[in-house]
Image (cartoon, rainbow, N blue to C red; front, side):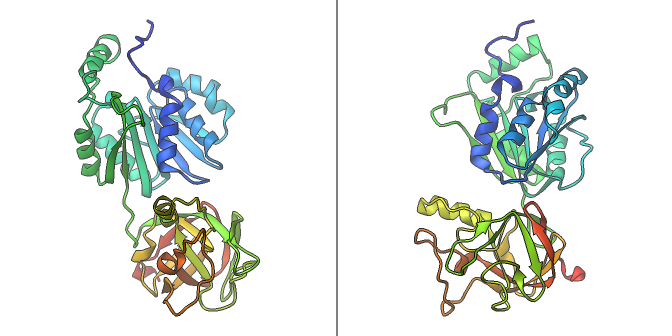
Length: 350
């Protein structure tokens, strides 16, 4: 049966839907994606091809489309694994993914509350869930449901933005927002994005850049990995060994906010931090808190810099490290790399 042109599907919606999600989330190198209702694997493969070092797991309940995925995208892309699994019972570890996507699939899913809880479980703190689907409140929404019932799936149920908001917030997601493509505000397709909160203790972030510079007055450059030496800092960095502020950390979210507010294009290292971290509320830390960064152990010695302490570097006239940087000493050294987990240790583990 030929697919009616009025009905979008995940294969037809790609790569536009995934591009839109990438543009808003800006996932970093090494991100791990989960694609629910992956079909032939085209969307999941597109994600790993667009984001350097990324990997993806796709899940679907159709043996036929998974066989097609294995012959095509999954078979050709070693960073993509496609699994036969229901979205209500994901055979995946807790806190294993940075981003979960589902494109033109959610309206097919039964027990939506359980699906959203499962997605929440497998996302790391700070991770995002992206749903691209039909807006039930649009005048075409009911028509879409009727066409789906006639041609494909009698269980199809489109939802409104408010229904999605309640679903995601009920599972624990925060900052739930509804997005539409610019110039397509009247389209009956929208994106719903929710974030899994990550409190400091027991929460986990991830290293997105390891940065160093040869001179203290230079911006730092992401070198991908490096050695943190106890009592010293990042080997090869101009700031190492000068004080107890051996390693500086800055949140990627702080860099992104500075870019939006000041119209600049800073990247990790632009503000002279050693480790750029995503998904952890660094400013909720206190002096004495300890962080496990990959195999290393750091202790917070200073939050920001007092006015009397000089900070000689800024990017395009903007300096945020003195306000939002976290400075640590290295207690246990080792190699750290992009993608390493960052976990704040509860008091009983220190």
